[in-house]
Image 1 (cartoon, rainbow, N blue to C red):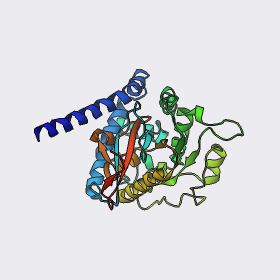
Image 2 (image 1 turned 45 degrees about the vertical axis):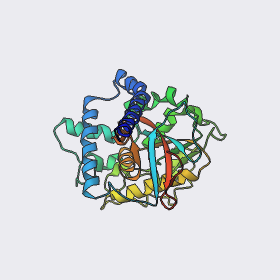
Image 3 (image 1 turned 90 degrees about the vertical axis):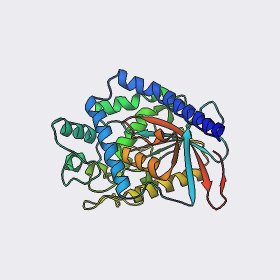
Image 4 (image 1 turned 135 degrees about the vertical axis):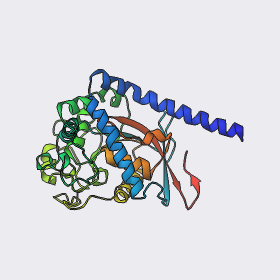
Length: 311
């Protein structure tokens, strides 16, 4: 028993060490270029704590589903086993709403990112579907040397502007800037959009406007012209975000591609990895900084068969 415990500890620590190595180059680049101000780092801690409290309050941390999904640190030196998917999760770069939230806090104003505030920076009408700041664009560009070395064969993005801009800047080699088709499919999906409702920064623009700005995107998943999910009166529940995140990973399971980049949002990522996926090491589920990339390998366990496809 002691040998088994020690073996498990060694595996966990080796996975954690690999996770740190995978992200070390990116983090060093971001810090060297001063792409995260102290106020932004404080905001990440505050909002991570706010959303964890929300998940606990809504009771979604231990949801049982027919298919259990496992996420482990991806080792790029190993082949991808059958039935598994390598997913490169990217949180968008700094948007103008992020900057506004930092400024509010710098002046001593408390901000609740979960939508509990009746007013605040994320509720301002000026920031409906905000674009990236100059810092946010630089955060995305820093990822170019990393993504250029990956064998990405599918790009999935949230239809919100800041996510698509981040994908464009982080992976310019994967899209065709002219009239021809992109190197790989670029698909916008509603189920990877940010938690919806109340916060105007999380309301997408009309489908036609998105297509005009980003003609290379496949928007066939956007069934309505307007953002039908967004509500001014109610914030989407954590259970709803968790369910659509889990459903998205099941959709990825059916795709022929093996390496997928998903460019999305902080609350969506946090809810997904905390409630819909079993992460090893658990640090994989920590709150993402703007412009951060984490690469994981997903494996699927069908509870009916009680058999791991891979772990």
